[in-house]
Length: 227
Image 1: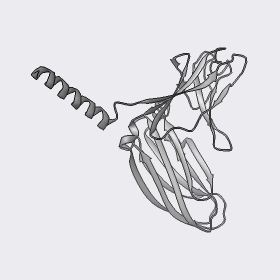
Image 2: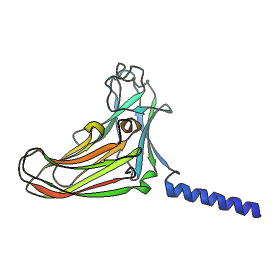
Image 3: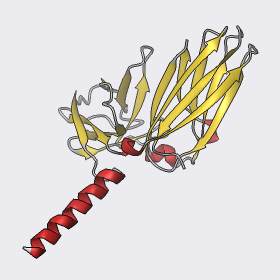
Image 4: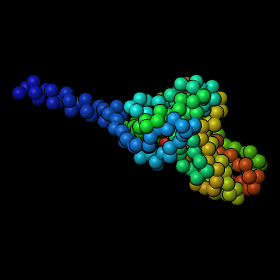
């Protein structure tokens, strides 16, 4: 009886640690469709990610494919994909053309898996900004990331400038996500291993490209990745 009690106590501690640290993650699995090797750059619309998502993974016939930033320079047999956004803000997963990135095999099952858990320990930062009416005037918030997961950014402002651009840049100022429009603006980006390999120095910019009026407000960043 004593051994059993100790075992149950140890299991309880392990479960508690997993829940507290986000190590015990769960997944939402969504079937996107079937592959067709006749279609170059075949794409599937991604449903809106459930709350608390820290990572998107794409499987083809049970095999994990690799997310990349671009098909440029990719080999014909390389099992990779990109995530793109259309003019209406909808996200799509797109595969190669058989020359830059592999074609999807005909009849293959394409599945999206959203991994949950890490967002339980998300950290938030708040930044007050001001931009003038000068074209291209911007305010920048710099930060560092320490792992893969989701970065969420929101901006809200008042002033004469009706439209601003909210931009998320990675290392070497590579533009990973952008939203243009009126207040409020929001964007989300999933940091992959490929993106992280470029470096850990990131920035969020709010920019006035309209040359019409000034604005002042706040930017909020939420992510478990801050150092």
